[in-house]
Length: 324
Length: 120
Image (tube, rainbow over the protein chains, first blue to last red):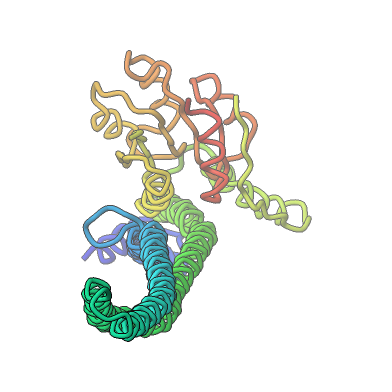
């Protein structure tokens, strides 16, 4: 074993105290211990940094996916907001057409009522014609009576009176037929007007219900979409916070680099001490000079200065930047 | 996409700087000392080099001198990222061809600000 060789070497150097030899032989072990501890710390920090990368990537991907979902609908490349607006416009258009259709129906009902009123006018004309026919019949009857009074000279007159009476009767038949037709037409128009009126009332009610329901559904969709937007904004904020926290952690984890350098410098000095004590070899510099030369950080130099001068240690926080 | 070369004997520092640069959209190459960094770089051009000072085999100053001697490294922005803050060392770095000097520990956001100033 190495330490036995060292003890063997030591025995060749007469005058060296045993306890110094014992301490000197522990130096390489101590050196190895601290270097390994530093190496383990470095590995642990490395694993933490790998986790940071993973955390940051997952967070970014989640935000991108959520934002992407808000930006498009399923497959047609149109955004949710555009879909809502298109749906609203379509529904408005449908309701407008239904409104116009209702207006046309109202117009038709008005026309039918006008027809009904006109038919009423025709009936009164027919009544007038009936009265005229009746009067003609009376006149014909009177004429016939007068013809009988006149005797043989009144025969032609009687024929005329008969003819007038027959025409009056025919007129009555015709007016009755016309009146029936008019009544039938009026009933048709009235029924059609009533049906149309009922249909319009029904349509108006259902149009209003449909409009309210559609508007409500669109409002719900828009509200859900706004909430999703807020969630994505919150997620984005959280992602920024995660980045910030990781940034702070990175600043703190850099302690490991400074620790590792100091440990290496200490290990190097332990090595030199072992060389000086055991092998009696020296580079020509004092141990303290060698220590100073190996430093790579302001605080290392400050620690040494505080021992040499008795002044307090001022630790640099790093982060200084100089562009040349 | 921009490319950066990170040179440091500490793997954790390479990871931390690498993480910072990747978040900013950089592709990252690595070297654990000046010699293997030059080997990794080869003849390709990178947009940025960040190097430590104290490294085994080839230190940061020697690395910068060698890099500046190569056609693909003459004008590349080179930032020293080191625990060293001595003025003499800074002068040495400047003479070797460093573009800037940052004393560790670095804050990722501040590092990216500095990079934005030196990388066109």
